Length: 251
Image (cartoon, rainbow, N blue to C red; front, side, top):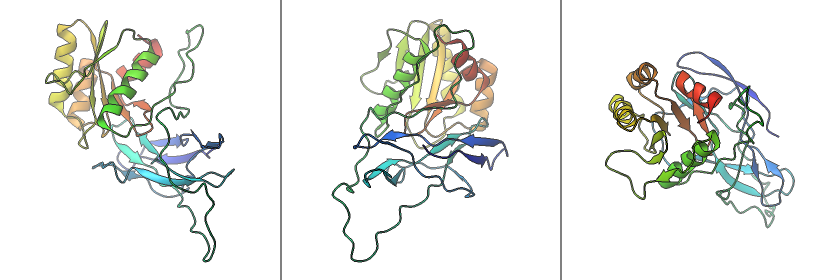
C-alpha cells in the first residue's frame, strides 16, 4: 500500500501523518497514489474539477488510471493538496501496454480512512467506511448520505434538487447541508444550518469540499455544529470537536 508521509499544515503548523487512499485497479490489485516525500502541501483556495485528478500506474499490471488527487483536511479548517510523484514517461520508441488508457475509478471504489476512530464502547465495532468517489455536485450529497448512514442515521432522505433551504439531507434527529462549491463555507451558511436544526429538534451536520471560513469555524464550535470536509474520494474528515464527538458516539 501507499507509504505514510508526514505533512505539516502551512497555516497552523500542525503535524499530520497522511496515508494515501487506496483504490482497486481494474486488474483487482490495490493501487495508492505515490506521495512525493518532502514536498510541501498546497493549500486549496480554489477548487476545479479538472485539476483534481492525478495519473497513477498500477505496479502489478502497468495500467494507468486517473484517480482523485490526495487531500488532507487539517483541524484548523484548511484543506491541503498532497503532492504525488508523476508517472515516468515511457522511453522513446516504446509502446504503452493495452491497459494504459486512463479511466477514472468506478463510484464504488473504496479506500481506508485512517482518520476515523472506532467508538471505544461500540459492540460490535463499525465496519470500515467505504466512500464513493465524487465527480459531480450530486455525488457529494450522496457521499455525505453514505457517511451519515455509516454513523448510524437511518431513513435518510435526499432532496432531489438543490433546495432553497440549503438542507440536502434529512433523517430523524438530523439535518445536513453539503456545499460542493469551490469557496469555503461562510458564517451565514453555518448559522442557517443551525437554525434549521433548532426548528426541527435535530443536529445540523455540515459537509464542505472547500473547507470553512475562520468565522464560520468559530461559530460552529460555539453552536456545536459538526463540520466535515470531503475530498474527491468521498471520505469526510472532522474539522472541529463536535464532529469528533459525533464520530465517537454515532447517531
